[in-house]
Length: 520
View 1 (cartoon, rainbow, N blue to C red):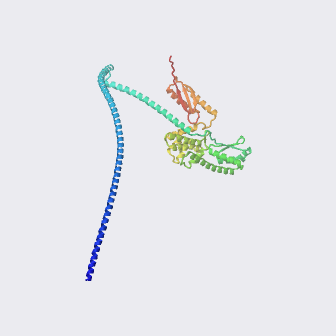
View 2: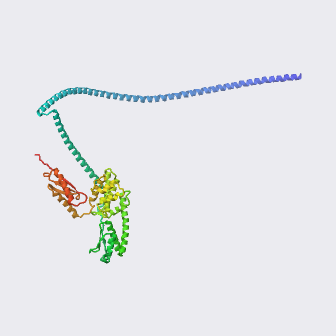
View 3: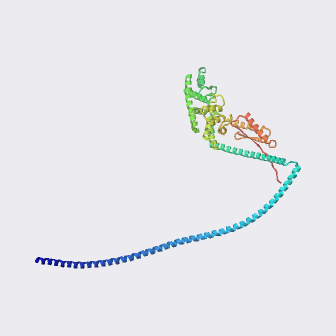
């Protein structure tokens, strides 16, 4: 029983506790709900206020953007409107211009219509006149045929022959005029090229001279040179191949030889013998042999220097000493090697001006007188000797023909041969190139003038350009053009036959007719 009451009491306690807990929880829940509702209301109010603020800001930003876009639109619209206004103005101006042009075209069209009308009327009038003229020509033709008694074919043939003769005469005159003009232009062009070549080359005016005398300190030394019974001089002449002339001239022994190289070897050997004092056949042979070797080396050196100065590659080795020999060869007092270098340079300048190969022209100029290095040992003229010598080294046809034909001995087969001839004449005839005494020079000019004045019809003659040209003035009353040409040829022929001169002499004959009248 007690247990039951304890159980009931426990259950009752539990019920009471549960009710209290429920009441407590209900009261707490109400409080929590009330607080949550208040917080929700506060958050809602805050969100509402923020939303209103944000809405106001968005509206303000939208209004500002609207204002900005409106301003930009107004500006763009203003620009477009201004452009449209300018375009309208240009169109208006163009329209005015087109209206004026249209008015002008209208006037021109009206004038053209009037002109066409006048032309049409003139054509009709010309057609009528042309018909009338044809009738008159036919009538005149019939009358002429009746008068002359010729058939139409015969008259036509006669007229054609007459026209042919007139055309042939006019064609001949035209050809002559064109030929004379071409010759004048060619002469002027060649003169300019030659003058330019001469001006661009500055050569020395002094000429080399090969010395062939040896100074002897005393007459006793002359006796020692001669030796007992002349054995020393005979040995010297035999070893050198020269002639030694010892006369009464004090202090001088003359060495004579046609070969300039042998003469130079003899001169140097004799000077060394005189300085050494030991003069006997063995010493003579020794010194001559030594000098000959040195001379061979000197010739090679001179030849190489010439080739280097001329800037010509691929010169055969056998040709180089021959160029060196030209350094001891003279022509009218002019050193042949220097002359060859001058011709080489002048030939290059002329060839360059003519559009040819300047290097080949320079080679032709340097080698054109190579035969003079051997003309004392080989028979024949130096052009042929030089050509035969260079042919052994497979030189080109231009070099061979220039070497053989630079004096006009053979026809020129290449364009370089006339260039070498011109350069050779320039180098030989320039002032100071060749030695000539003043008396001989003046005498040659006087002879030239006297020779020209000796022909009938010649009034005056003047030698100019240092005797390279003679101007002949004839009497126009007694000498016509045909006779003038004959007199010029006869004077040139007589100069060739009777005078000695370097290069060539130009004969210019002048026939002048003067007509003077007075108006009163």
